[in-house]
Figure 1 (cartoon, each protein chain N blue to C red):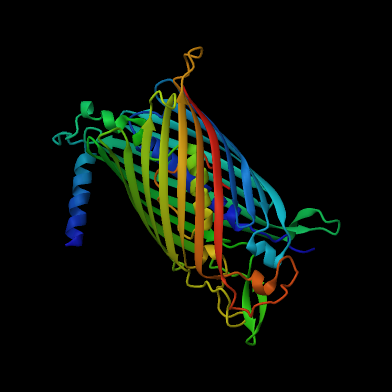
Figure 2: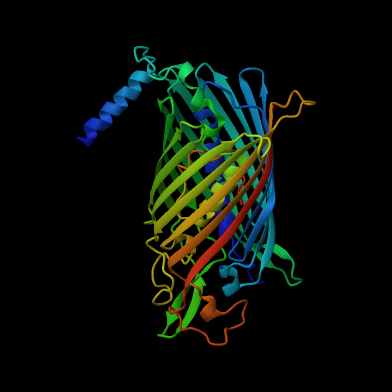
Length: 76
Length: 413
């Protein structure tokens, strides 16, 4: 069942990647005002987010997939 | 010569993952809006971390500028100043100061619905050199409701060990030079679900090959039943990790937003980690407090299971092929609470400045270890034994408390 579900997701992605235009966007561009609000951004200023992510990175065994981690490398 | 041993983990680990950060920056900047170049921006940040006997502070700068309609260039530079008398240092060495500088350069190219990003970063410290190259591509599809991103980075690191010469000057140990190669592979999806809800998912694989541990840290072991000794850590020379995360952000009816995140982590060292985070953003643009303010509260919980070869104290010397006593590989849980205040402004005399921001962020981090004991109660501090030493393995469990401050100015053009 899991394999079938995975194949279904993959085929949907592949379908989209080929440039299929039959899927109508269900959230129209003029309905995206809220999503475009700056308070909806994931993460903060790139170097601020990078600094904090690196604080966690250096304290924790886990690493990666931090998504909105921001720019540069503010390592410390 | 004796090793200028010290708390290197804080620095080494993040240098090792510099690649990931730069990579993810590219992923985020181009990934969330693949068909639009990021805004022109300049940031100046001061940060300070203070916890567990370690202070790290310094400035960080970032500038991003578009060239025409299809190219954006980003440059960043930072200096870390580390002053360490951490528990690792207290039990085996003397305090130390160090400084690290890093610069990075990133270029993004917009082509139709796709953004291609390439970058390079370089980090220099007295005992560690890191060079990282990265590339990503992001593509908008389904009427720009979906953005798919792929990223790759490769880091080449040179690891040295500082020692003191007969005059007391810090030099690289001529008998020690190791290398570490890291590679990051990442795929991400950003999906608009409704006009108020957006979802992001990411999966990332990171591989390390080479010198993965600190050249300074030791493990401890029992000698008999009530004595202890120390020997250098020994780590595997490879590590592969898998991390998957999902995050969501929802726009509330009264112009505020909530977000949540969960990440699952596992690796070939036996570490299993869970991360959960919640956030709430609330703008206040009324005359009562003046100007446009944005306040945000964040709460982050993290827990992990120890690496297979971690022990607080081993039964005997050379107990196994791999041995670690790095508390970042122990079993523990941590909670971090943060507050962010942002003041937005415009200056009429500078019409080219579309928006300015003053930001202050404070985070408090509390870490409680389940199997990392405070060895200062038995080994003492900087060579001075405690008045009434504890028997090895009976010391109280270690707790870390840290204060993290950030102040930064952002200008958008």
